[in-house]
Length: 152
Image (tube, rainbow, N blue to C red; front, top):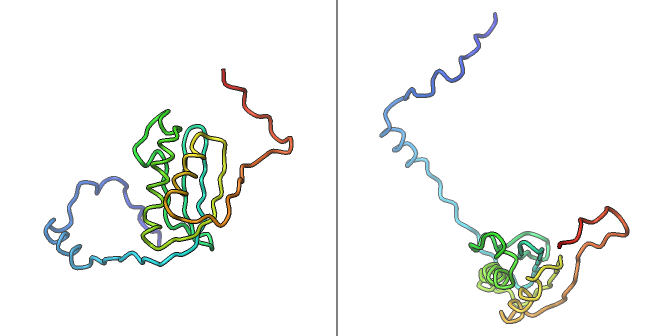
């Protein structure tokens, strides 16, 4: 016997039960999730500094991301995202929670040639986190794709 094909869009405005019952049901079944805070003593700070934005990611030694921030998430828009001050603000925002978790040493991996790379490095140095290494991981082509045209 063939199944009937349900009509789509016909039940859009139909209420099943009253709203009060639905809300009470949601309150009873609500589950609260607590964020697990781990003590992190060592980690890796990745700084990706392009000409348009700066992204800072802090991870532990196994590569699990602990916190991250960018100039865009700090409230900067447009051309202001590429400024050194935006990179400084993003770095402070990403490093703050990690310092509270007890990070003392970190390796820094910098990618890109943007204005924010030096500003981010200065903020990390002033925060009290000791460097285990500072590495430039900017991808360099071995005569691969043709680069975009130069700015005028």
